[in-house]
Image (tube, rainbow, N blue to C red):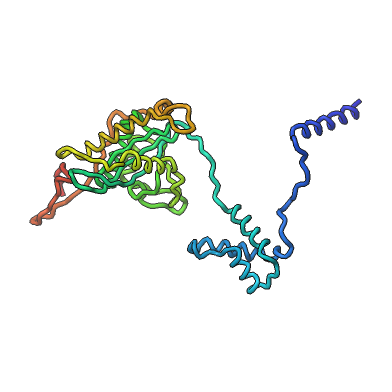
Length: 320
C-alpha cells in the first residue's frame, strides 16, 4: 500500500510540473557557447573593453579594430563575425538597464535651473527652484535672482506652504548648497544651512549618484517642462520693486492650473492624485523656517566696516 501511494504521488508531481509549462523545457545550456578559435582570446578582448571605459568615448575600440589587434599582436586566425558577436554580447551585459518605477505618495524631488526673462524691463537670466511630487506629478516652481543658500532654503519653505505639509523624503543632486563634501563611503557631509532646514522640518534627505541625472528623473523632466511651458514666451516680471513677486505669482498660478491636467497613461488628474500625496505629508511645524543667511561681523577699532544693507537689511551689533 505504501509503495503504490508513493508511485502515485511521484507521477502526480510530474504531471503538475508539466501542466504548469505550456512548452516542454527542452535542452538548456549550462554556459554560453564560444567559438573554439576565440575561446583563448576572450580574456584579451575583455581587458581591452574594460580599459576602454577610461578612454574618450570617440576613441574606443570597435569590433574591427579589436580583430586587427588580435591578428597582429596575438596571432588570431578567426574571422570578423565571431569577434563582433562576442563584443556585442559583452556590451549588452554591461549596458545599464532601466525599469519603470512606482512612486509611493508623500515623497519629493528638488532641483534648480535657469531661464531668461524680463525683469524691470531688462532681459536677465534668472534661476528657478523646482519641487516635483513623483506620485502625482504635482509641482511647485519659484524664481530667484541667483541660486544661493537663501533661495534654496526659501524655495523649500514656500513649497511646503504650497503643499500644506512636509514630504517624508526629498531627493537631490549633489549641489554644493546642500552637500559640503561627499565622503569616501558614499555618505554626505551637509552644509550648515541645509542641516538647519532639515532639523526644522525633519524630512529625510536622499542624494543621487554624481553625474547621474536619471536618479531623479522626475524633477529633471519637470525642470524642462517648466521652462518650455511656463517660460515660453519669455516671462515678464512687472511692478516697481516687486518684479520677482509678480513673476512668481504667475508661476504659482500655472502650477495650480496644471493640477487639472490628466497626463498620458493616467486615469486621474494631477489634483486627484495629489490628494494621496497630501494625505501622506508630515505636519508643518508651528513656525516656518527663517530662510536667511547669518553673518557674524566684527569691526576693528578705528577702521571702517561696510555692510550692504540692500543685501543684508538687518543686523544686530555684537560685543567683540
